[in-house]
Length: 223
Image (cartoon, rainbow, N blue to C red; front, side):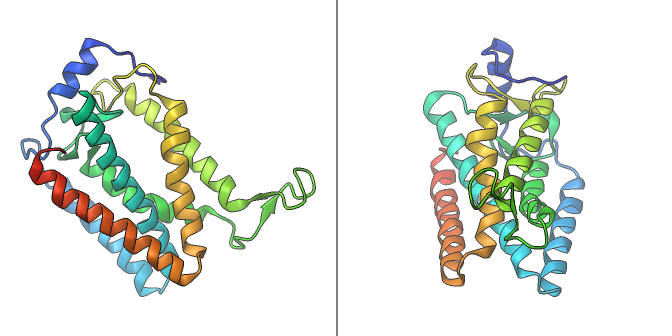
């Protein structure tokens, strides 16, 4: 059921080669429903003036898009991306490694992580035992969420419809946890508490880069 590493098999390669990016062949109305749910969540938080929650969501979601763009570029340059999603597992594939359902989940993941932290976000664990200051609750929550998501991805990689496809033998749960999910949740947990000017600069730069890369690379056929 769980798969912890890619196996370099011909089957995995064939599945990746068969991916139809932005094809509407499997499109259905769940696309609209999921979009409506995401809009409802964001506008509810904005209406309540919970702007820190919105910042958390946007911070992680922007990092997610940068990673997905990078993954697609890797696939173009080296033949196979680090991770892929299968045609059978989704209604719409946005880039080779991300489908609509997965992307919309990541649009909310930062909000979830932020809400899971203690109300007092200055809280530190094991103060005095692991040094004078201990470990920030922001870091602890980021590591917990990263581990949870990495383990769930290992489940997806082992599903019969190949929801996730890992081709490279050296890519799996451990690199996913360290290089992907930890940065995701560090962004959602730390960005909202940045000094306002730095937070604004981070979010604007992050999303401007995402926009430029998509506008340039999609028409060129790179991603």
